[in-house]
Image 1 (cartoon, rainbow, N blue to C red):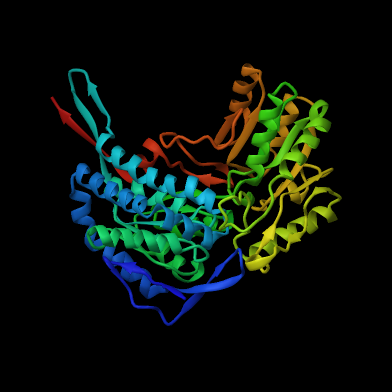
Image 2 (cartoon, rainbow, N blue to C red; image 1 turned 180 degrees about the horizontal axis):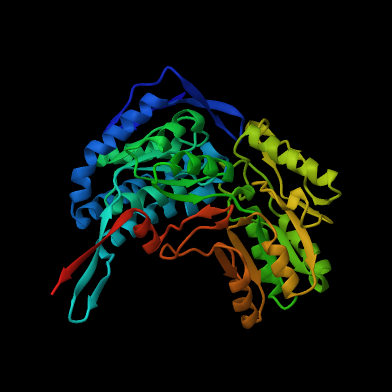
Length: 479
């Protein structure tokens, strides 16, 4: 039985009397326990970050970059161990953790190490009068809160830029998938990262999380998770005017026109709908297809989706794993029942799967597809966050834009067309923080990431991360 504890001020804490069970989604079995933090633990971690802030914030960018590269090297040296842990903790195939999640975490630290050394500020000469220039200074101690679907992938996406630009960090991973965050603390400890620069605490959001976000010594909060939790964080932080970056839910559209590359659009639509068992905020769960193409697209989409067979995530051949927890599985099954009640026609899947062997009690659900559901029904308006997709026909470009925009969310849209003018027109018209044309989830760490409407507030990535994790100060020198 593994026992995961907090990492505060450069030390692993003693096990807490209050603990949470750690459950492997593929088997339903408890593999360990997690220390559950409270107000006292939050205060200890924040105070450690405050004590370390002056020295870390004053350190040279090259020095901070060197530490980030050491973290990246430490993860890379244990890549297979991290991949196996991420798979066991989250239910995702070890193949995905090995080829996507862990390499991305390594890349995040290396990218922002380079950014720490290379980012530039602005200067403006006021001719004959003076010179204005902008200093970018660290915010101070910040809190980084990440979700369970991409545990180390998203936690590193926050920690790396925060550290790179001179902020000490208190990080809280999801209590459902904390294992690779604990291993990250081991890496920080092994390389001798200065005490208090990175603190990782565990527990339930309603217990420790609310104390982290409300603490007056915290100068910024970077959060990825549900819209409901993001709203609560915004309310808690509002009276203190601290900086917020909130990346929240999505009910994303994939739009396929009749002139699109057929094979590409089918392949990418399936990937968008069911990657990570549909548990990615960017997944395209509403698939809008031009009416003339719908019959052939539907058949090809269902055939492609049917090749995604749920299996033991620990097997190297597995490409579709388990949902993250029993409560989440039941939530998704509830959404499927609602789709039936709303008149949807089930085309594929829809039932919990029972595997043989060690995974007999695991939380498995295969790709599930409905059609004949109107865009304004709850099934097409509320985020499911599981392997459930709907097919929706449309007539023309204007209707496609109207349907895509008609949700409370605005995170990502994937558009498939061979008409380049249409691609540009629709990219401008779609109410979405990210628009992909003829691809899905093609990411570049230099570009801004975030959503609009109920999908988020602010942007991270590249220069936007630098702007978020620093405070701008204008200096004017008169001639």
